[in-house]
Length: 404
Image 1 (cartoon, rainbow, N blue to C red):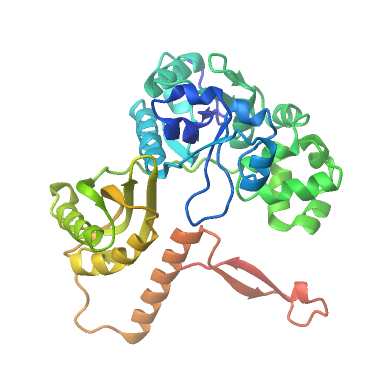
Image 2 (cartoon, one colour):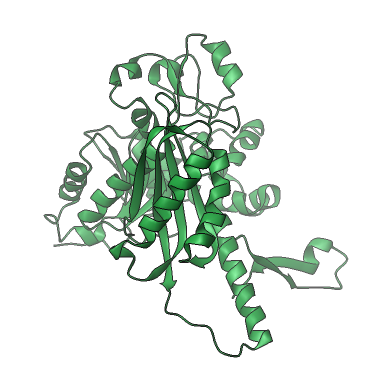
């Protein structure tokens, strides 16, 4: 059996996943102009919209006032971030169950390399895609290419029952991407801001962007421009699959719609239950997710909390999590607490006598690690002097990754 040496990236796209979860069993609403309402207390921007709403020119991220002006009959559905996260996690676990090492990009969009699955599922790409479709159990679009960006682009052109496969290497990928609009860059949050200035400059397709000199694009748009230019030429970073985690969670149904002190007491019960679970195996908690099901018709609320240091003390966890309950936009019917990531075992002990210098270094490393967890791998940088005597300020120093 032939196994390709180049990456065989499969993109799984489930259109309007957030909208489908929000409408739940009211599927008939998908045939009328509807959209996800803005989150309470957040920016007044709508979420995913149905086909009927998009026929009026309504698009995700549009301001609420403009959307209602375009379609006064637009029906707004409360967002359900907790339901979306749970549903998406089940789909990711279903893909991992067939052997895929999945890199989730956003709810409804994920990629994996199919090369390692060919021997497991019949030896052909079509057999791998059929197995993935069967595991998902719901309609999905599949795009296949040698790079992540090209696979995502292929998924936008695919149909539910007919995957789009882009064969060949870098040149074939570039030819496939050339006629596509630069608006495709909006699929990457880091590149979304490039679309508007590129369109103002008259660059409408990815092929036009790829034809520009790399130095000119980098000089105008910086690192994001360089990344976009490389993507349009068929050059992409390798996949970064996630580490399959453990699902440890607790939920408490409240007898009445609760808020304030009642929620704080319920949170204390959930913390005690979570710490007493056998699956924890004496480990500390590094990050948790607290969520709530709001009163009927109010959707859900969800927030991820990363502790400053791994905790197993219920009192310190209450002090860290209780202020978050003030963000709950409405009385809650159910309160949930789940482990997002575990820390080291609680048996780890500190040294009897700590060296002040090593202690400061350890604190610095921990601070850098927390910053990268919260803001991404490029959040902590350092200034490296290159030519201090240069008369051009931009040549005197550069930003580089801070190595711990």
